[in-house]
Amino acid sequence: MKKLFLLTLTAAFGLAFVLFTSVSGNNGKDKAAVTFTKHIAPIFQKRCEECHRTGGMAPMSLVKYEEARPWARAIKEKTIKREMPPFHAIGAVGRYHNDPRLTDEEIATISRWVDSGAPRGDVKDLPAPRIWKTAWKNGEPDLLIKVQKPYLIKPSQKDQYVFFVFDYVFPEDTWIRSVDTHPGNLKAVHHANTHLIPPNFKVPEDGYIAGDFDPGARGTIMIAGWAPGVDGVMLPEGTAVRIPKGMRLGIQIHYAPAEQERVDQTQIGLYFADGIVKKNLRVLFGDRKDVAIPPGEENYSLTAKQTFNTDAVIRFFHVHMHLRGKSYVMRFTYPDGRVEDVLTVPRYDFNWQRVYMLSEPMRVPKGTSVEFIGTYDNSAKNRFNPDPTKEVHWGEKTTDEMMQGRIFYESADENLNLAVKKGHTVSAPTAGKQP
Image 1 (cartoon, rainbow, N blue to C red):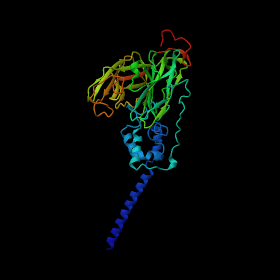
Image 2: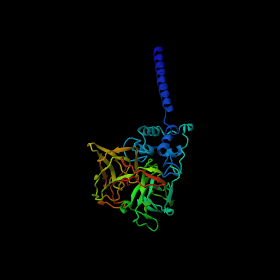
Image 3: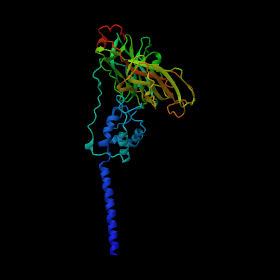
Image 4: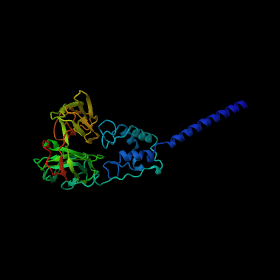
């Protein structure tokens, strides 16, 4: 009996030791638990707060724990699927300037936080609040222009598109280094694209065109794009864009659905070139207008081809399709026969039309050919498709389609050697180097 008692006691101590070890282990895990204050808030500050804050365009703020906690499961789902933050080109994180994508480690951290019950953590661990500047990030612009008058956005469950034409007409050739966009209402403006408008463009009496409208079909050229989290492109010293005399600017604004009336008066800030301009930014444009997407077709593709006629230094890319747009690829074939997909957008989204600016410019040799490959989904599987029973052709309306790609680059050998002051030429270009 004594022996049995000792065995029972030993077993009890053994069980107690196992339980103690288990509890101690859990306590260790608790100490290393992922918390909002220590681990999640810094990620949200870096990747999410640009939109998800008071005054931002997102429907909810994620700045405070009380604001973020109810959305924890949804945040995990969206980040695992890489639907948020919205960025649609693939490649190494950091390849593009202002790349908002989460790293694998950040996604895993968010998942662990949610799976452990989304704990708050110690308030002492919170990082200092991020201050979001409402002023111009590159300082006061050299020229500030805005739409003629405040625009009233009526309540609607649908996205709304309006193309505004600015009054200002450039009195002489003007060299600029940047176009920056200041939405008048961050809650309303989903994204905005600035266009260069030729003198023969008929300006509407009210100063804008509402509804489905493609500016490019009327001879305009897109020169800048804005979306939440995207800063204006500031070209390096010596590189600029020439705006010819008599031109003006226009901006196409995508307004998000709204339950109540809102007012917007978006502004554009221009930064002039100063000093010596050596290079004029160029565009290699891929386009197809013979679009004919059969009803129900899931993988309809078109390819446009272009070739670099100079050694080039690529700065950034832009692609444009409409609601049936599915994916986009820019495929380079180099003179030595090597083939490379330089830009891949596997899940194109018409609602997020970004400029993909390279963190490090890309040099390509003269004779490099480019295939601009756009693929479309005209089936019922495409949740944005307004009518999968319709054959779709090229057109200006959002319910029509387009196939456009743009590569913004410099000629590596160009040297204009223009003396420019406040955007205006003060000396003639070197002989044989006309822009």
